[in-house]
Length: 312
Image (tube, rainbow, N blue to C red; front, side):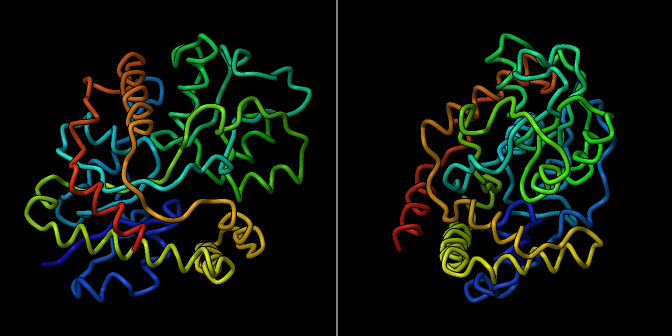
């Protein structure tokens, strides 16, 4: 069979695995699908919906069977009616990003965001971070003006005064910190665990469990290499950024790689509680069309396989 794996730099583990050739030792026919090369989904008003890029291409012709993303996309997929199952999660990525505003703006906490323009890479983990921060402050999604910004362009929009607050993520956040004094409204660690995660279809998991085990084992091996060789791993990201005309500071990428957890483990009850909270808030905020039960996306044997891959 051909196993189609969706990847992009924001899921660091799969991006490195794409370059290492490890998965091909177990599955000779692997098709790597770069999410950035897929057609853009229809535009979505960030006030009333979630982008469906990952859902649109999940298991479709030209799409992918396995994908690694941030926190939000599996919830979007479940809300769109896809029968997905979790493969595993990383450790917490609490240093990856935070909600910031310019010093002197008068915005010093999430409670100050009422009526403000908040830049977010909508549909990613950033949407969840903002929604949780608002909920903790007694606000809702309807209390802000969400602005969908690219992870790179968002910093420029903040500096230009086009948005009032921004979910910044490293390494891009470092470039903005060097140019302006920022105020942290909330950091990730105080809000949720924000792991990387991987998921697939229930059909693939049930019909080809060996492919699932091979993916988990390959991720574990590749991630161990990243941990031991952070600068070499960072070069993959810097070279890719340079090829696309984006900032390609190898030192910044190395710092970002060193600051992120690697390794894949089974989903936990705490993680599932966070996923369910996010899903429920998406429904309440009008971003998801139906309520979903995230625990329905758990297959116990996959958790055992993820645990074995990590230990092995």
